Amino acid sequence: MTDTVRGLVPILATPFQPDGTLDRAGLRRVVEFQLDSGVDGVATFGMASEGFALTSAERRVILRDIAEVVAGAVPVVAGVNGTSNATALEQAREAAEGGAGTIMVLPPFMVKPAPDQIVEFYGLLGEFAASSGIEVMIQDALGVTGVAMSPSLLVELSKLDGVTSVKVESPPTVPKVGAVVDAIGDESEFTVLGGQNAQFVLDEYARGSVGTMPACEFPDLLAPILTDWTAGRRSDARAAFARILPMIVHGLQPGLAWAVHKEILVRRGIIEHATVRAPARPLDAAGRALLDDVLAPLQLSRPGSNAGAGGGVTAS
Image (cartoon, rainbow, N blue to C red; front, top):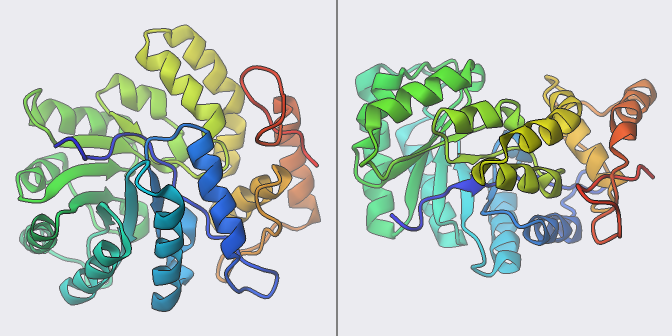
C-alpha cells in the first residue's frame, strides 16, 4: 500500500500559551519545521503531543491546523486512545474527517482486553478505516497501557483489513521488531516502525524496521543520520547518532519528557513557551540548567540559520 506510513514521522508537540490555552501559531511553526527538515510524515495526539490532556474540541482544531499546513505534502497520523470500542471508533471518525490518512491506535487499557478482544477491537477499527480510505497503525505501548501484545498477536493483527502498520515501543523494542518482521515475511506490505523517542532506531532499522516516530524537536538532526544508514554509511550514521543520544535520552524522563521537548523547541526559536498541562511537570531552574549542559556540545542552531554541517542548536 503506497500510502502506508514509513520513514521519519515525528510526534508533534502541542504548544500552549502561559495560561494553558492552545498556541496555534506555535503549532504551525512546529509543523513547518518538520516539513523543512524533510520528514516523511507527521503525527499528533501521541504521547509526545500531550494527547492525554487535550479536549475533543482542541483535537479537532489541532488536526485541522496541521492538515492545513501540511497541505498533502506528507502523510498525517492521528492518535486514537479511546478506552472502549465505541470511544475509539468515535475518535477514528473525527480523525478521518479532520484530514488524517492514518490513525495510530492504542488498545483499550482501562479494562484490560483478552487477546481475542484485541483482535475484535482492531478488526472493528480496520473495517472503519478500509471503508473510509484511511489506515490503522497499531500502537504497541506496554508501558503506557499495561496491555501486552506478543509478536504472534501482532502478526495476527497484521492480517486484518485496514491494518497496515505497527509502532513497536514495548521494550526491548529491537528483538520485538525483528520477531515481527521475520514472522510477516518479505512479501507482506505490513510495515514495522519504532518509537521510544528513536532511542534504538538504528538497531531497529538493522532488524527490519522501516520507520521511527520520535519527538519533534530534532528532525533536522535525525534525518541525515537515517539517510546515511539507508545508504550503507553505517559507521557515519552511528557516530552522528551517538552525538545526539544524550539529548534523546534526556527526553525520555517520566513526567518531564514533555517539558524537555518543549524547552528545546523554545531554545530553537520554534515556540515561545514551554508550558505543559498537568499531570506533566515543567522543568525547574536546575532542570533547565542540566538540559543546557546536555545541549551545549551539540551547538544546535536555530532552523534556517547557517550553522555547520550536521545541524545543531545554539541555546538561547
